[in-house]
Image (cartoon, rainbow, N blue to C red; front, side, top):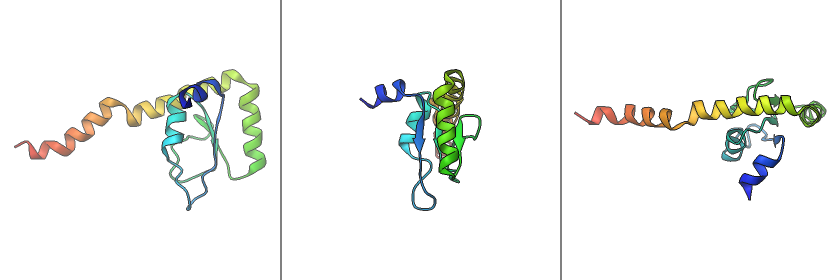
Length: 110
């Protein structure tokens, strides 16, 4: 079960290579929404904020170090995971979804 995997692991590793893969895909968003900090490549479309909701680098050794840090420091992982969840709630929450659609539909309601 994917939901269980997201809630029982401490970090999500996302290594999308620009320009061949999307740094902003559903699996990444689901992991962030479940409260997981993300460690991944510095991708131009990534919603991850380095040092806040996860860690980004194109250096494998640095990524490995960030993963180790999050595995050792549960509090840091939880704090970053909460920030990741907040980013998703702000960008993709129901209120924002409704207001954006309302802005699209309002011109036709005349």
